[in-house]
Image (cartoon, rainbow, N blue to C red; front, side, top):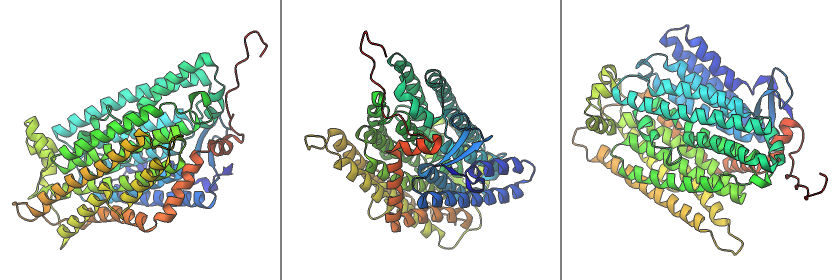
Length: 550
């Protein structure tokens, strides 16, 4: 157990909380300054947390609120996985905030405070060490995301946002019921303590525990957008303002993170009677989501919906790998999945930022939103609001259209998994691990072959769809050249793509970090010892024979 140096572990939660509260006393210009300072500070803190994990790979950092001992304390836990997700959040936040200052933060009230509270909820969800506070941080980030999804005006955005709110409120109810059942059976919600107690649950209480875990899993899978719980995602992300949609690219990864965390601790190999709980569901659901997302990518008639379906492809891929790793115990699969998670999230966020820049024509928005507006019988002013249509131009940058086309090409190559970029490296690492896990008879399983084929087909579908959109936009358009793109909107896209390029160049060190992270997940005793100071119970004791004294 390592004490938190200078309270840095709680900083990713406190910084956005204080920044969001402080913004309520200032005007818009001051809010932008506070938002950028907050994002930079979170990036510095995230780098320090990553650096801690790199130099002390087996250390778990704790922050005990109120200085109560675990498992009674409200505890924040930092390990390599949590540090990775906090860093990814910070890397997305700064470009999205800068992009929003061009004009999107003026489309409604309190954009920057809502954005800061979203960051607070995300960081808290990644750092918390117990399920109840995970629920609290989930509600914080969801409440902020509701405001961001509805930010601005227009009928389509409101309809999609209300659908999003209804789905997630239902998921929150399931989350709360599942947590209550687990607490009723185990007497604890601390994840490290659950790893100790779950193996000792008597047989008569295991069905109730499994029911609680199933309800909890459904809530997480709604957030991870697993089929058939994913129909809300493409329309919601498509209709949201670009900086909000780009930040939403990580929201589906919260569900994947929690499933990975909870399954590795409470329902992993230590809980022998519940080992691999839900693994088959994750594999089947992940493959179905991958198929659904691939079809959606091919069928999309605009970049907004295409980007939303790309999120489904990413989530389906990750869920299937997590399920296969849970049943096979393959840390190499998880390492490749973590590399792919980071690369795909950055690329999808960049694509969401580019959607409106590419589809901006003569001061009006076009593409899939216009197609959807026609389907609803709405005009552009009803979809976006009059102010959003009115102010869609700005001082441009010479050659920005060419740069934008190159950025779009880079996104297409990343999402389709073309070598040698980071998207290819992540997929290659996953497929190598999946195909390397053979059954006892030496044959590759049908599930592994199906997953490999679907990943390759999803990459081909993404390439076809994005090339089609690129030709339509940059080559075959009869509407004239695209308007000049302001530097303040183009720079965040370049930064996100530069991060994926850095992952490609530094693939060796990055993959070593992912492998060490996956190894820690595969050895939950490191987490349990770091939080509680004791090793987890290796297995449940055998029930006494009939007629004997236990």
